[in-house]
Length: 465
Ligand SMILES: [Zn+2]
Image (cartoon, rainbow, N blue to C red; front, side):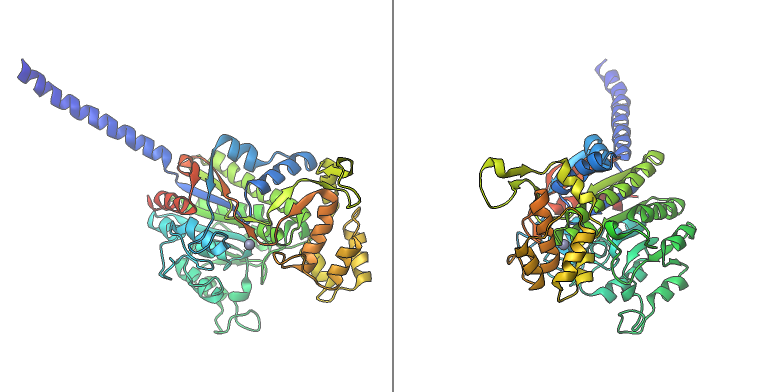
């Protein structure tokens, strides 16, 4: 009796184990995405996304996909940002950690603290048979896209970074930075190499403006739309450069048609960081809307290809931004002399016509007081430049030791005094960054993590076929 039971029990147990394994396989399949899209707003933490959400709802009457879709319907994580040797970080160390899973030093690109190369996210994607796409509003050899794909002891090794792109052969490269693809005098390379011609020889279509990018087929694509970085969204009117959303659309078209084993697409908005450095509230608001337009493109792609994981995050916070309440002037500290950042103050931002970078460019290195007054009157309607700030700009004085851009930061202070949107620094802060993920595998990015945990989870996902 007992013997018969044992004989019948064995196949039953085998069946149970087989069912359990099949269950695991199904669960594993559900958790491993075919395609991974990272939308990466440099210099952006929860504070910035909240600023984007509120202003998008109130001023442009549009839902904000980062918060309303990704964070509400997906998973939420919080990432530490410190590099190997400090508490406050730079973009190279954070992007390297989030790409490789290894904590490294300030300025390092895809190498450990010992300077030795460690596998990047793009290289892990190639192991998994995935195509790679890189997009940025900055120079494509800038810290973040570089650290997600190649290696350099220093972020300033721009020509060496570009050379490695030629070896890595991402299916799509879109952004600025033609300067280090071309020899002097057309570009800034010292070695006489024309890397654009080398990409063309490898079969890449080359686009130099938005129209050429749109006309490109679904094959391999190199789009370089500026010698340096691309225009901030607030300055884009009349530009022949594509927007971040347009670049995302073009990259997804090319990748979807040529990735039998899926793809990894890295989409960076660098202007969100630059505008934070300049303390440019109006510019940042427009940029956060433009970033969200790219998130909407990715989510639309995900609706058609549900085996796609969409991750939205940043690398660190820039500017110690805070919309707050403040005194209208220094005549009294009474609460009657106080105002709160309200919709009326936010509406003032929509009337600003240029970025603070563009204002600084127009004013030059030795700003003239009359030219400054005219520029403020014409491009910052409703704002008054107090005499202390006006003198500071003319004398090119920094506001404090943690503010490095005299013209931009001081014009930024003018905007702060009348809107209540203040900045604590022109540098990076240590605020943890938020990571929202939606789609298969999103739960891997949930909770409080070190930024290297993000890198390890990403690599495990990408290296799997
Ligand atoms: Zn920065």
